Image (cartoon, rainbow, N blue to C red; front, side, top):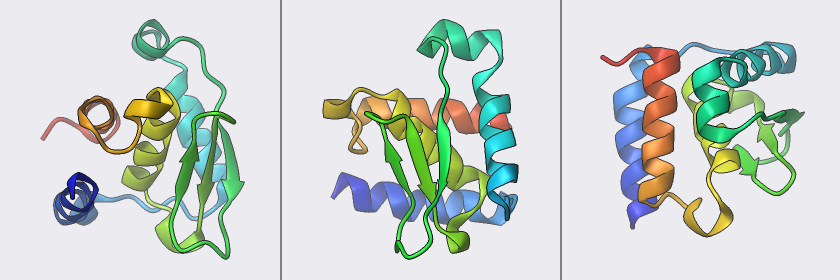
Amino acid sequence: MQRLRHYRSTWATLKPYARELPALADITTYVDRLCAPRWFIRRFGPRSITVRDGRGARAAHGDATRQTIFMPCRLRFDWVVLEEVAHCLVPAPAAAHGPEFARTFHDLVGRMMGRD
Protein backbone atom coordinates (compact mmCIF):
# COMPACT_ATOMS: atom_id res chain seq x y z
CA MET A 1 0.00 0.00 0.00
CA GLN A 2 2.85 2.41 0.88
CA ARG A 3 4.39 1.73 -2.51
CA LEU A 4 1.16 2.50 -4.37
CA ARG A 5 0.69 5.76 -2.44
CA HIS A 6 4.30 6.68 -3.20
CA TYR A 7 3.89 6.07 -6.94
CA ARG A 8 0.59 7.97 -7.18
CA SER A 9 1.80 11.01 -5.28
CA THR A 10 5.16 11.10 -7.06
CA TRP A 11 3.57 10.83 -10.49
CA ALA A 12 1.02 13.56 -9.75
CA THR A 13 3.52 15.90 -8.12
CA LEU A 14 6.68 15.57 -10.21
CA LYS A 15 5.56 14.61 -13.71
CA PRO A 16 4.61 18.22 -14.64
CA TYR A 17 8.18 19.32 -13.81
CA ALA A 18 9.99 16.34 -15.26
CA ARG A 19 12.92 16.68 -17.60
CA GLU A 20 13.31 13.94 -20.16
CA LEU A 21 16.67 12.18 -20.36
CA PRO A 22 16.21 10.28 -23.63
CA ALA A 23 19.63 8.63 -24.07
CA LEU A 24 21.52 6.41 -21.65
CA ALA A 25 24.44 8.83 -21.96
CA ASP A 26 22.16 11.63 -20.68
CA ILE A 27 21.16 9.52 -17.70
CA THR A 28 24.76 8.54 -16.97
CA THR A 29 25.82 12.20 -16.99
CA TYR A 30 22.92 13.08 -14.67
CA VAL A 31 23.78 10.27 -12.23
CA ASP A 32 27.48 11.14 -12.27
CA ARG A 33 26.61 14.79 -11.55
CA LEU A 34 24.37 13.66 -8.68
CA CYS A 35 27.05 11.45 -7.08
CA ALA A 36 29.96 13.94 -7.33
CA PRO A 37 29.20 16.75 -4.82
CA ARG A 38 30.58 16.77 -1.29
CA TRP A 39 27.11 16.68 0.31
CA PHE A 40 26.38 13.42 -1.53
CA ILE A 41 29.70 11.78 -0.63
CA ARG A 42 29.37 12.85 3.03
CA ARG A 43 25.94 11.31 3.28
CA PHE A 44 26.23 8.18 1.12
CA GLY A 45 29.96 7.67 0.61
CA PRO A 46 31.61 7.61 -2.81
CA ARG A 47 29.36 5.82 -5.29
CA SER A 48 29.60 4.70 -8.86
CA ILE A 49 26.13 3.82 -10.10
CA THR A 50 25.91 2.12 -13.47
CA VAL A 51 23.10 2.93 -15.91
CA ARG A 52 21.75 0.12 -18.09
CA ASP A 53 19.13 -0.08 -20.79
CA GLY A 54 15.81 -1.29 -19.44
CA ARG A 55 14.14 -1.99 -22.78
CA GLY A 56 11.64 -4.79 -22.56
CA ALA A 57 10.91 -4.04 -18.89
CA ARG A 58 7.64 -2.45 -17.81
CA ALA A 59 9.24 -0.55 -14.95
CA ALA A 60 12.54 1.09 -14.11
CA HIS A 61 14.59 -0.75 -11.50
CA GLY A 62 17.36 0.14 -9.06
CA ASP A 63 19.57 -2.70 -7.82
CA ALA A 64 21.38 -1.83 -4.57
CA THR A 65 23.55 -4.95 -4.68
CA ARG A 66 24.97 -4.20 -8.14
CA GLN A 67 24.68 -0.39 -7.80
CA THR A 68 22.91 -0.38 -11.16
CA ILE A 69 19.76 1.26 -12.46
CA PHE A 70 17.79 -0.07 -15.42
CA MET A 71 15.88 2.54 -17.42
CA PRO A 72 13.20 1.62 -20.00
CA CYS A 73 12.79 4.18 -22.80
CA ARG A 74 9.33 5.33 -21.73
CA LEU A 75 10.48 6.15 -18.17
CA ARG A 76 13.62 8.15 -18.86
CA PHE A 77 12.81 11.21 -16.76
CA ASP A 78 14.91 12.86 -14.08
CA TRP A 79 12.53 12.03 -11.21
CA VAL A 80 12.42 8.33 -12.20
CA VAL A 81 16.23 8.27 -12.28
CA LEU A 82 16.31 9.80 -8.79
CA GLU A 83 13.89 7.18 -7.52
CA GLU A 84 15.99 4.32 -8.86
CA VAL A 85 19.19 5.88 -7.49
CA ALA A 86 17.47 6.11 -4.09
CA HIS A 87 16.96 2.34 -4.27
CA CYS A 88 20.71 1.97 -4.77
CA LEU A 89 21.49 4.21 -1.78
CA VAL A 90 19.19 2.74 0.86
CA PRO A 91 20.11 -0.61 2.45
CA ALA A 92 18.06 -3.51 1.06
CA PRO A 93 15.67 -4.11 3.99
CA ALA A 94 14.61 -0.44 3.95
CA ALA A 95 14.73 0.12 0.20
CA ALA A 96 11.19 -0.98 -0.61
CA HIS A 97 9.53 2.46 -0.40
CA GLY A 98 9.60 2.73 3.38
CA PRO A 99 10.40 5.86 5.41
CA GLU A 100 14.18 5.73 4.87
CA PHE A 101 13.72 5.32 1.14
CA ALA A 102 11.11 8.12 1.01
CA ARG A 103 13.42 10.49 2.88
CA THR A 104 16.35 9.69 0.60
CA PHE A 105 14.23 10.13 -2.54
CA HIS A 106 12.76 13.40 -1.25
CA ASP A 107 16.24 14.74 -0.47
CA LEU A 108 17.53 13.82 -3.93
CA VAL A 109 14.55 15.51 -5.58
CA GLY A 110 15.14 18.63 -3.48
CA ARG A 111 18.79 18.78 -4.47
CA MET A 112 18.40 18.00 -8.16
CA MET A 113 14.95 19.35 -9.09
CA GLY A 114 14.60 22.16 -6.57
CA ARG A 115 12.86 22.40 -3.24
CA ASP A 116 9.61 23.88 -4.56
